[in-house]
Amino acid sequence: MAVTAGVASQTNLHTTKHKDLDVGSAALQVGSGATEVFAVEIDNSANTVASYFKMWNTLFSSVSVGTTVPLTVLKIPAGVKRIHFFNGGAGTTFGTALAVACVTTGGTGGSTAPVQDVKATLWTD
Image (cartoon, rainbow, N blue to C red):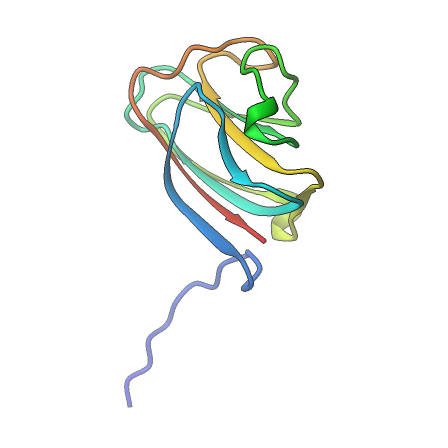
């Protein structure tokens, strides 16, 4: 009998995987109610400048990218793919909803999308 070894994920096994979202300067809805986020993989490998992955605890229709204060901002350096585990993989709850966007300026300000596509995969419950 053959046995295949693998690497176990740090994320909860009861998660929903939102794969290969094309994230730009327009807010995307990931969860329309309370959403727990365990991890996010962000691929900024096609860009020559850093990108900032922003997350809001609200419906995307309530987000004005560049003015609405995000709950979380993750800087992704140019030319790399990164995985971020929330609370060590145990998850962080966005109690209202979850909206995301990706721009070229950190903090609250900035509404310019990266030149090339930024792909994101989120594991949520």
